Figure 1: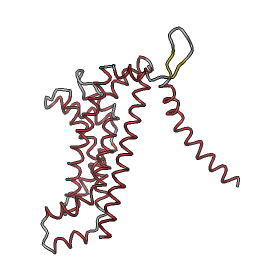
Figure 2 (figure 1 turned 45 degrees about the horizontal axis):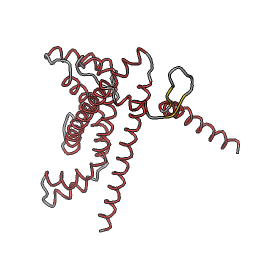
Figure 3 (figure 1 turned 135 degrees about the vertical axis):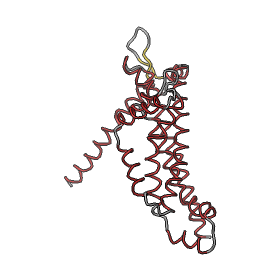
Figure 4 (figure 1 turned 90 degrees about the vertical axis):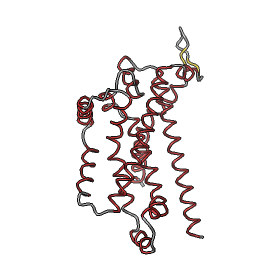
Length: 265
């Protein structure tokens, strides 16, 4: 009885420690301090002011654009690399996988400096394209590792049976590999999107003064002091990621339901 109580208390304490800052942030975002008074009232005027902040909204739009493009491009490239590692007996398969893994665990500061020197060497101006190429570079290992680890679990006998029945590589890809890879593709896209939109270190080295993204904008604002706008934008980001999670969860349930129906038929 005592052990069960201590275990439950420990679990609740961990959850309390993790979520209490978020709860305080949410509550504080709805309080508005009246001028010349210590009284507070609950309203959404802070969010209205936030939406009127053009520079912050532009930075958020830039972040979403970069993250969406880098996640989409990275997912496509990662799927093709994973498909090559799965379907073909490449002598350099282990070397390719190890190199991608090394890049994924390399310190961000090392990656940032190396990319900065690369762009200076090939004379690419710092801005949108340098930022996009950098995000694709450091997101690609996560995409390949995530996708290939799931594709390795495919039933090889199914692919070999399709080949024996005369199916071409394109038909095998379209009707077998691609449908089975949908969960891996979706999870890879979401993972790379989150990694991209959350990056500060590498982005601060490879972006230009005319193209500012949200993490760098927030970082520059925090240097001066924590304002209410930072609270509100943090809540909006939290709601956005919760929406993405619920959307992926719903799509996954629909996919599993349709898969069961096909098996029954």
